[in-house]
Length: 160
Image (cartoon, rainbow, N blue to C red):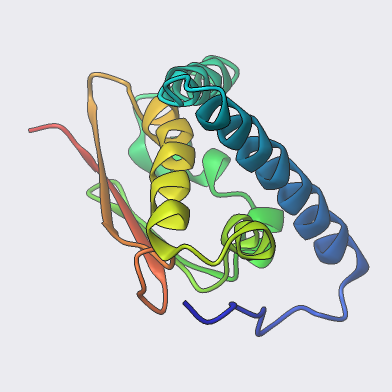
């Protein structure tokens, strides 16, 4: 897997700071999971913890029946720049295309194993799964940068 590089917003100091903080968090995650594996522990514990974190963040959001309002609060402006997102949010569906991922960039500094990076990405996405675990919502992960695609595509829809 070729290292990903940011395409936009390189001159924005705050975006660089948020990217750096996100990479730092991803490095922590990598090292925790890697140490668990080295000790023969099942690294799946990380999924549960990350999912709980997403649920915690969901509980901190204002309650609303509006898919649009909820997703606007989750996919905020700084995140749109940090992850180079294209965002299309309506009451019927939220579609977010991520053109850059600082987590994958951090993991690529730790390992060149694309399958391990793909696993770490899926584990990290458990936070998003927790964030959208409301019984009225469906979370869809259509493709990922870690999976070899040029972008990640996330969709959130009302449960039918």
